Length: 203
Ligand SMILES: [Fe+2]
Image (cartoon, rainbow, N blue to C red; front, side, top):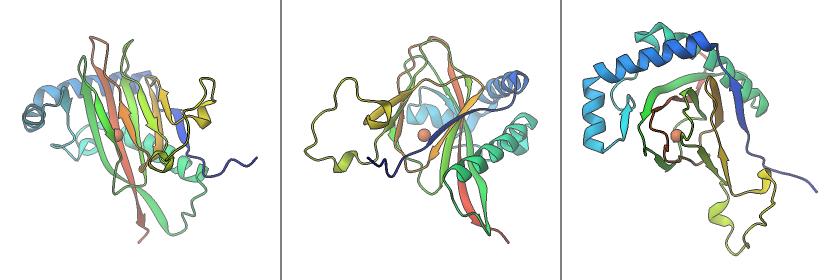
């Protein structure tokens, strides 16, 4: 039996507790100060705060985010290696990086990250009951008449896989992989930093 066309999901610790704690502080400052972001969240019914639509230069604004970017660059390069990409003449470039503060009940419906190659999330605060990340088999629209899976089907054969995030860790996947943030059952906020990497030709 051959297992072909595997989808890789990488989980890796990033930085130390000091970095995680300083990011948490910076994000609370941001969520207080970013008026444009808060206006957007209110207009769109976002259940908490995100900088997604308002700020695209967090690594330039905060040294904590600059430090995080440096570590994420490394993690993304290692992921490209695990995917066996030929990066000769090419470079991975952080295309977007934004914070998410999801309040109680907050969730994010299924989506992909178009226009980039590697996406991921670094987890700042994951209280007990915080929403898991649900990944979806990209072949789902083609399964057609296939029966349901047996209860004991292994993770690699499943059509949906739920991953519980760990504080201080980052998850990486290819940007086409559909995912969903399940509702946050914790009273405390679920705080994360999401990002996209694109491929650029080296000058
Ligand atoms: Fe996402």
